[in-house]
Amino acid sequence: MHFKICTIGELLVEFLAKEQNQRFDQAGEFIGPFVSGAPAIFADQVAKLGFPVVFFSCVGKDIFGKMCIHRLKSDGVIIDGITPHNKANTGSAFVTYKGSNERDFIFNIPNSACGLLSFNHINENLLRDCTHLHVMGSSLYSFRVIDAMRKALDIIKSKGGTISFDPNLRKEMFDIPEMEQSFDYIMEYTDIFLPSESEVSYFINNNENEQQTMFKLLKKGIKHIVVKGGAKGAKYYGLDEQGHLQTLHVDGYKVNSIDPTGAGDCFGATFVSLMLAGYSVEQALQYANASGALAVSKKGPMEGTSTLAELKHFLFHTSIE
Ligand code: ATP
Ligand code: MG
Image 1: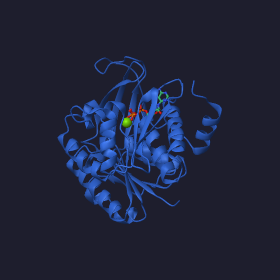
Image 2: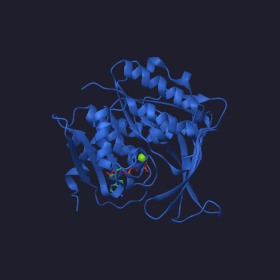
Image 3: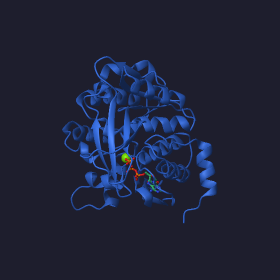
Image 4: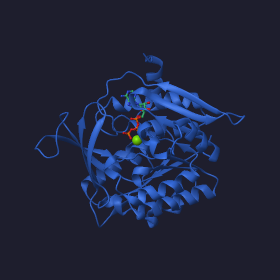
């Protein structure tokens, strides 16, 4: 099946605290730079699977920017939509870890090069043969980026293309009002919705349970919903041919979780790609589950992306226990 995916948003370098429970207000060692940014990880995972993907972002004219572009290019991402910007340096982030799944971030995104991404950076020629747009909620950090995203969304939709949406909320971003306002607009056009368990409550109305909310969203036009549950796996919601709620669940694989960053992005990229490639929901879910498990087994946000062969190997040699 012919398809081409595009995604838009933050591209940055990330520095990881070396020790668990390391703090931001005491001197400590950080490892990096690692190439990062949720939509960048998503694009990298799509490319690793062997599918075409265009990524729109901005980097500074600095070595970090070169490193980001080089990494994405060598993994097969179409990088013509990444603009080196004169006015700012490449974005960056610092991350510390608490327990197995809790992280604190300090982001330098809105004032960085990727924070300056705007309407004019979305080159229509590059979008011409794109059939699917993936929207990361974390990328909607300014009116400029929201404008850029709407341009891409309108172009893709006007050609009959499809949209996937991962809210990817970070507690550090809750005070960005533009972001919240744009969510309603994006949800109207979403075909594949990929929230995390912790984000579902944001979309649930008073006195509704998760099932009722999911059913309502499906009735409104979203075709597939997957709620990502970290080590527990993921839950799928869809409608069968009679319009009844259909649910599926995959248990997470028992893996040694080294770094949770990127799991959701890899999961989403694999699920979306394989759905577009014509796999069944069950198969796409299995592969996505493996993709998320492999992502957490590697240190570094983008270091755990997998090829289709690696996912197949993992699926055939690992059992959920
Ligand atoms: P993030 O936004 O932090 O990247 P997320 O909340 O979007 O993450 P998660 O639920 O953490 O996404 O992870 C996505 C998927 O990856 C899970 O649904 C599961 O399939 C897999 N996964 C994540 N963590 C683990 C783990 N510790 N062990 C096994 N599989 C995992
Ligand atoms: Mg996420």
